[in-house]
Image 1 (cartoon, one colour):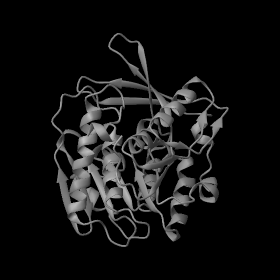
Image 2 (tube, rainbow, N blue to C red):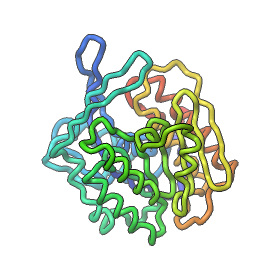
Image 3 (tube, helix red, strand yellow):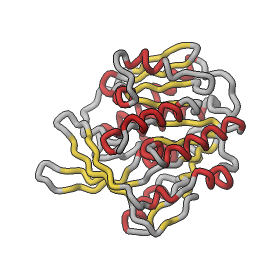
Image 4 (tube, one colour):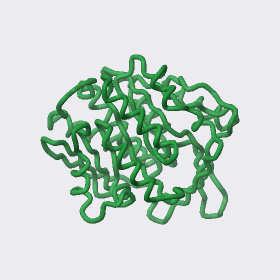
Length: 311
């Protein structure tokens, strides 16, 4: 397999779960997933050095999740837990857009304490990523504190908001916490739907600009079939959506973001401690590569990230 010229090591934390996708006949089709788990697999298949730090269950689903990480050349450093695997019931509409219901009480991936990551899980890491369901209260408070503590360390931090307000007991508190946490990451990924869930009405591009700050150097804004932007304090770059026959959209955003990060890593743009965002040419190349990764996933059922040689 041809690999990228990876420069750093990614540490990824967050949920690994099973999507139970409801078919038109009412039966459920199980697919392995979870946004951070998808991202780790996608990075591994692109030739990046990746450590997945969250625990996996010892149940049957957990064994499959572990095997899939192994097959994608991801190093598992979170161990195995006695608690069950998280579940999500996914209904996909006629346009291919998924709607989720999550079952996440007493599950394996929530056993990880962020303080443990700080003590023992970041040795040799250059990029730390967390996001999605981990940011929901009460777990998100501890992840927010971890990201704040990483500001004094030479680690590039990344967050994918991937908002799921329909499963939050207090949507306002959830949005407020995620908003605080996003400001602690060097690279942030949001969709137009995420921005609405965060309380930003009106133009998504303008709202995304507002996320740039002292810490946040790059904001990746995905707009589905309307393409994606990367915003920095020095400029903005747009990437049209890929023109493909869509099977479903599950995991496409994760594959896009993995391609974006992998390309930046290859170009040396995720160097720990960097004080300025990447050059415009590097951003454009990263967006284009991310789009190619998403295009492959869109043509497959579930999240099936492309291998480097397929691109």
